[in-house]
Length: 476
Figure (cartoon, one colour):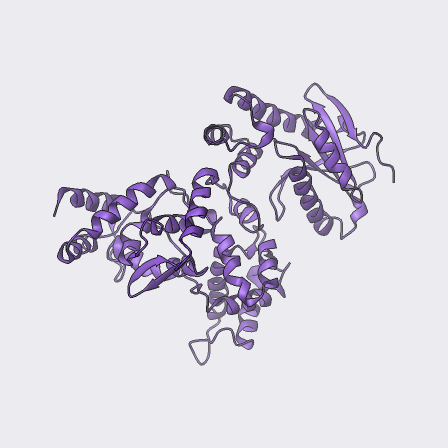
């Protein structure tokens, strides 16, 4: 074996990272209609505790003909197992979520999924997979230095091979991509692999298959997962089938390729991602679902900056700021800032949020703090408070977003509080936007939402607050 491939075998053995899809049901074009029916059944249990309804949900699936028990008389533990298996599929598509309190929720993406016609379902999966990150908190712990968008990386590889590549390249090379920076090396490695003789390819796979899996420094002697290569092969039907579902990737005669006539589409998606896409290290499953479960939110520098700034992660937000500035992809409100100015702004926002937690009366007399970073289905809101008349007040810092985006996000938070805390009463929930610097665009955006009680404040940590919109406090 040539030295290049000997080094490859050594590296393969020492790095256990690969794209992993939990084994639920296989997601494919033919299974999408059934998955949608299963989500529709799950919707009957929305708002109820998952651990209490698993059996009832599985029973409802059985009655609807959406699964058949393997035994003539199913055991009591069979039904929860079926429920959990379907949950893994819902996680991969971002259509449903079980909260930390074990409450069943259908996400906004799930509602779109239910409304989609049969012909639209593959497009829905495509849009979700363009934002799907691996690793993410729904599939286990973070792998050090890894962060990739599997669908876009698969498209990126195949765009270099108009005639396709052997399917074996998936488990040998593609599923091992850790970040978009690995794309050029992966393409080069596949080109080298294609130049090997058939016997050399077989020898390479034989050597990889002979390397045992290590777990905690010990050999894992499971009967089927005898090697990392074999482990990836066992998981391949689940992950690769998901990635092929939108129809851009096809597999025929043990070859992977892009669908005929769609190379330009794949290349455009990949180039746009390489310029504007940004992997986000979500700290919790709740944070991940709030992003993935809300359609239309690209995994962009703007989203990454908003997330890290909200969490107070100065180091990660600075790295993203630096990269975005290099690629000329900074949000408008941050353009022109030097890195040191950005870090100072980050600290100012954190200080402002800390200050407001204990000094809300500077905004309005009688305003009382309830909770900070309050979790909602579209992400955590900055501060939840109550006013002197016991109405809920959603308070959001601007954090560099465009005016229409911060108002749109505030309206989503407010809608959640209306439903969850105010028993559907719109009049009992107000919205405040707080910005350390005046912004006429923000005022105009708030003015545009005339039917919703929104107010905009200029506020500094010196304890000086000025209501920018409306000019006088709303009295009801």
